[in-house]
Image 1: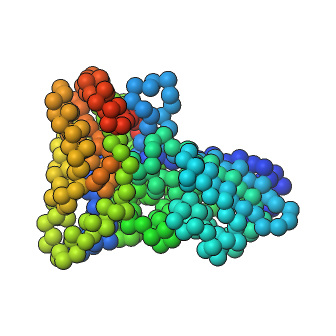
Image 2: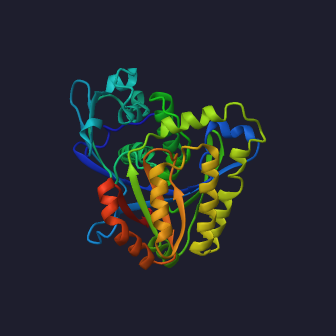
Image 3: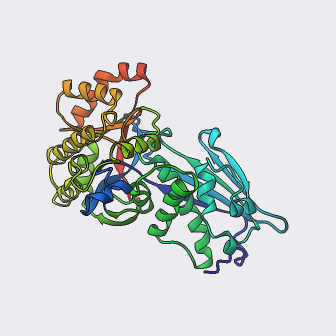
Length: 372
């Protein structure tokens, strides 16, 4: 495909913005990794795309990964891509020819993502400055890395579409996942990138690793608000999902098609999706999340970490608690989402434990179901 970004005279100096969702309450997680293929049955993962803000900060907007792209056409010489993040340790500046040749810091997901674009077609005469902002800290186990990568590509896609071309959500998800796994060398499933590429409510992914097909679900806003009001996520520290993926992979290395640890997740993702589609109660969804949390415990002893356990114990002592969901890979750090029977129960949990959470550096987030 030939893409000309310089053809339209008004492109130079243009700004492009993209908001990409995070994800929580992934049910059936660990069935989106390569080793899950050995069970010989369909693998499904359910999750919820959300925008987030610190709990109780009603004056603040719910946000996802916000990506702002500034573009200018260079009259001579090679263009550069400057990537700026909330955390300056992630900042990188790379010449476009170096993206093409692979001569960049290959530990940088931001740079690796930009290297996935077809620069031989786009040309190397572009100056691009890209700002990435997140409502949550890195390593929150809310699909943050995948959403950042997808956010870059979604912003670039808006620029590319000026020429009448562009990428589908599935193509964007695939590029983002390959940037993480093939370029950076991370161990990762596929759910985060596909959820982020659509950034739209509830997803059921069918996965024949790495091929991923997403099915979405549209429900009424009143029901969404009910779910949002009964959910809070506690981030307990920075998490390295790639390291946890390696441990699980090693633990399952000698397992066959009858692997009990993976079989424990059978049917849970579909049950969660069906529960939402039928406007099921928070209690019904919570039961599924509890089953998934127990399956995580059986998959690897470190998946439900000590800080997750502390938060769950606090919730169990608080009125109206229904169920937890350890988000993402689990293990050290990351986050746990908690379902309660009512918004008042959520508030009571927060008020009762906010002093201890602050002392431990835990942070609480509330969510709005994303449609972006």
